[in-house]
Length: 336
Image 1: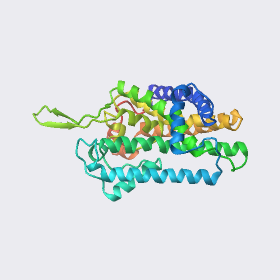
Image 2 (image 1 turned 180 degrees about the vertical axis):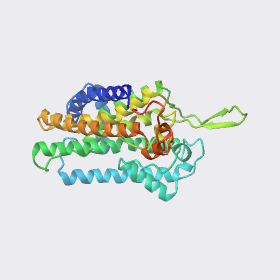
Image 3 (image 1 turned 180 degrees about the horizontal axis):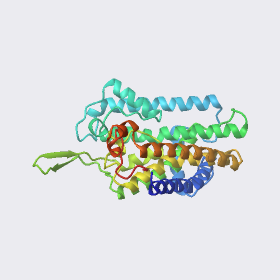
Image 4 (image 1 turned 90 degrees about the horizontal axis):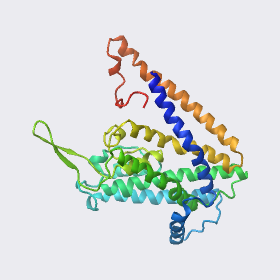
């Protein structure tokens, strides 16, 4: 462990807390259907979506209706993603000509993305077309995260009301969270990732000449904006099989720190949203303090263990810098 490493950790956490406070209040306002600074731009789209779907956002739902709506939406999302993955070989935006995934792999992948767990049993750059990445994975990164946030808001309303008869409207929550929270944040973060060197293109993979005269295929694609919502929505399943270990998904230390910031931002903010919804901001701060305490304790334990190295390797006389390396990215130091 080093002072610089702890300074990096402290800087990232300070950035998360600084942004989580206003974002938590903003999410509470969005959940209540209040007007925000984004409404002049996005409210026409919101109303259009309600009209197209035949949804009355003012119509409340009890826990059974809310849960059924959520399950129906998730089932439809699963069916659509499964179909895209199975049929990607005959669908457009497939410059590498990847065939459809096997039934088992498509099922596994669709279930994991729809449930926001994002288990990745495939290499994105070698098995998924651009259409699958964008219309399949990226869409689910948005809506599965929005579904989870919607359930958190419904739970907060239940605590506030002391009953389960009016939890809000799932369709309104889903739409508002996606439009007013996840989409704007993803645009800003995605543009930042592009500026930091992540690819964002629909062009084919590049071919480079190696030093020994051979050729190497370099995977490209619409990476930056998928990585943005991947982390903002606490999703897994990156564009590349090794996720942010790939230099196009984790190009430098700033991009890595920004990804950590994104991963923690909304969970921290939701603590303060809870306090605003139940009408007692102190409760939100208590939740945030408890969460931060667990994060700091776990971070300290993991950082100490990583810095100390494997005692069995040390006893065998191996270089501690070479131990515990499977699945690790230490390009920017152990702290990040």
